[in-house]
Image 1 (cartoon, rainbow, N blue to C red):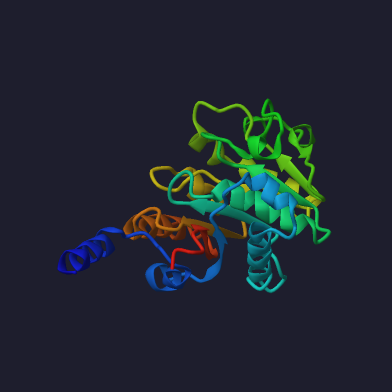
Image 2: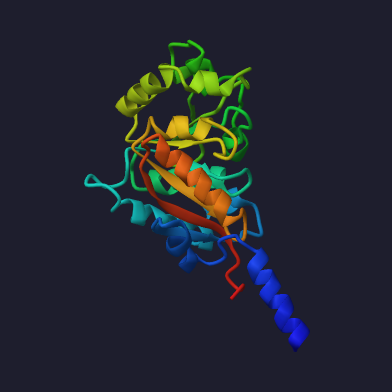
Length: 251
């Protein structure tokens, strides 16, 4: 019993990740928008099933965001995380899908110019995309594709540029947002991870607000806090946190 007790205590001290939804507000000082369960099957198949647990989870998150501004669901937002593989890209895609089912035209943009994934999630080509527009292409429509999901359109990242940070820090990102919001009700940008990169904070400045994705039992809390502070330093507004990959039987 003594050895077991010491082992549990040691594990509790070394595991600094956010483990439970109830810890989010206490550890990160941000509201919890919702949490998503660990998915065993293919994520895209789960999103096609409107009765699945994952679809319900993201619909609930959409409902929480509907109260985040005075005009309802934000017209433009970015989805950020501390490190790769926390569920950021799937969160962007899932929110676009559930939002499209409310009869809103949604543009899903892959802003992760270093390691794009939205085209794979949606089964689209990646020969043209955001990087083309940021590099000087004047026509947005040539890089936008209709997806299989109702009212959801996607703009892939396009060819990987030599310097993603340089492209994103120019004036054309702001011009892109202005043009996109003229043709769509909502624009959701999947950004690069914040830790060690400037891309996420740069994108965060150009949108109405940010959803911050945190993987359950993922990165250390101190790393998450540092990344959140970087986003705040550029004056970006963070709507709240989505805790992903929660094991429902973990308790």
